[in-house]
Image (cartoon, rainbow over all chains, first blue to last red; front, side, top):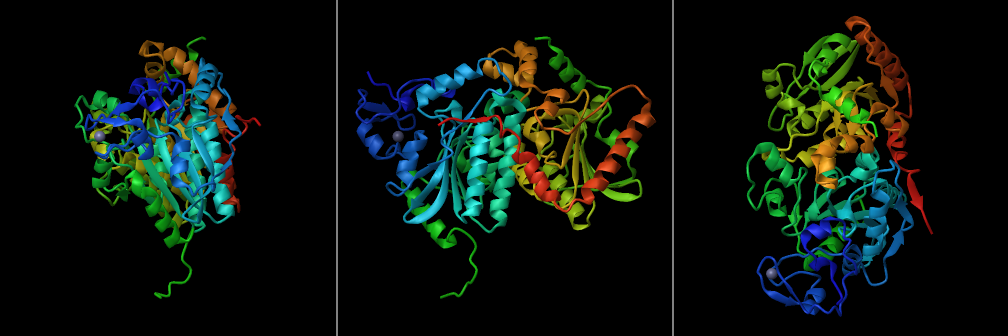
Length: 291
Length: 264
Ligand SMILES: [Zn+2]
C-alpha cells in the first residue's frame, strides 16, 4: 500500500519524515480524516484543494507541492539545489539521520530556493520543508537562504519566504545558531536596498527561525491555525508550571498580539502575493503621482 | 568522551562568578544606568547605560543574573524578556546616534520562556536585534562571561568581536534540552555537552569567537584591568575602520560556509 507522508502520526513526522514515499495522487488510501471537523475527505479532493479541508483546516504541505501551487507554471528555477549539510561537529548519529531523511523526503536540505513568477511578477522564493527534520536550520539552510537574499539584492527582486521549522538544527551546534545572525544580516541588506520581503509563516514556525527571518518580513503573513512562537509549548509549561490554552501560539493569537499582518488561507495566497508584488514592483516606489 | 564540556557548563552556571554588573563596575568609570524600552517596560535582567572607558564614553549593556537568591529572582535568573532586548536595542541606537561604541556582557541560559514573553513577541524582539545590530554604525564588542544560551545570547552578540571567558559556554541549546530531545534522556546531558562543541575553545575553532579571556587567579584589579585594556585597544582599532559594517557582515557571512557541501 502506498503510504502518504502527511497521513503519518505527528510524532513520526517530527522525527524527520522517515516515513517513506512522498504524497501520491493515486495512493491506495482513499480518504483522510480531518483532525478539526473529523470528516473523511477523499484524497483526490484534498489534493485538488491543496490540502485544505472544506472546514478550513490546513494540512502540512510538501515544499515542492507548495511551489507548484504558488508559482506560474514552469516558472520556478531552483538555485543552490546542490548544497547540503555535512557533519561539521561529528555529531553522533547525524550523518545517518540526514541520509535517512534524504531518502525519505527526496530532498537534500530543509529549504528549497529559487526564482519564480507569480502572475507574471518575478521574485525570489524560498520554501522550507517540514518533511526534512521539521525544517530545522543548519549551515546549509543558512547558506541557501543568505545566498538567495544576496541574489535578490543583486537582481533587485522581492523575496517571498514560506517558513516551517522547529528551529536551529542542534546537530550543527553553534554553526546553526550563527545562521540566524547571518540570514538576518542578509535580510537587512536586501531591505536597505529598498526591496520587499514577505514572510509567510506555516505550521509550525518556532525557535530560531521565529527569532530571525520569519519575523523580519516587511509584511508577515501566516496560514490559519499555524503554530507560531519562540519557545516550545512544553518548555513554557515546564518553566511556568501552567497548562496553556489551545489557542496559545496559534497564528490567530499572534495576530491579536500584533506580530503578524494578516492570516491568509491557501486558496487566496497566490492572488494576494501577486497583488503585493505588483504594488511594490519588487521594491520602493520612486515617484508617486497619484494617477 | 570525557564529560569535560559538561564540567564547563557547571562552572559557567555556578554561583560566585562575577555577573554583568560586576564587569560594568570594575572595568568602566561613572556608569549611568538608563532604564526602559519606551514600549511597555523595563527588564531587570538586562542592565544598560553610559560609562567611560579610559576617557571616552561607551554604551554598556549586560545581562545580569544576580548573586543572592533574592537578586536572582528579581533579575529573572538572567533570562531576558522582550523588553530587555528592546531596551538594549534602544541603547545601541542611541550609541550610534552619538558615535560611541557598544560593549555587551552576555550571561544567560536563554531568553525568558513564559506566556507573557510570547505574548509580547520574544521571537520578534530577538529577530529585530539581529537585524539592526548587523548594520549599527559603531563598533560592538560582546563578551560571554558565563552562559551563552542560544538566541537569547546571540541577540546581544551580533558584534565585530566576540570574546569568551575561558569557562564560559556558548550553545544552540542546553545540553539537557538536547539530550531530552535527541535521546529522550536528560541524564545524557554530559554526552550532549561534548557533542554540542560549546566550550570557548570549540567556539574559537569554529570561527564563532575571536578571543578567549583567561580566568587565572591574578587578583581582582588585574583581572578587570586586563579586560579593560583589551577593550580599549580593540575599540580604538575598530573605530578607525572605515569598513566596519561590511566587516561585521563578512564576519557572520563566513560562518558555516565551508561546512556546506556542494554535490552535483
Ligand atoms: Zn475539516
